[in-house]
Image (cartoon, rainbow, N blue to C red; front, side, top):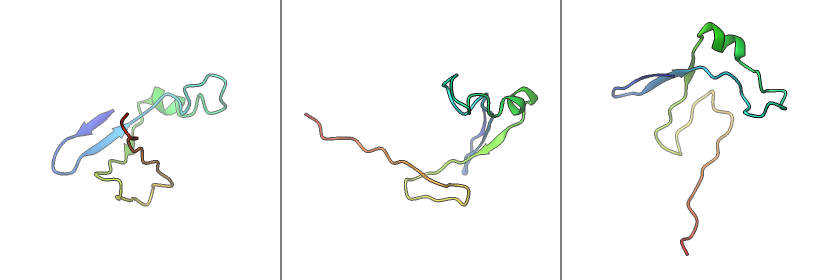
Length: 67
């Protein structure tokens, strides 16, 4: 992962696989890219309401009530 810090954060990364589950058919996705050192631009959203054309879905985690 490479991150350029500044007024607008830019980040690029490469992962070995989409899934951490060796039994998954997605386990070895991106292995060739990872071996070749190819990086992909990562989205960095500043707030939950931010959007981007590449964003196809999102999950917002909220804290629960405290006991």
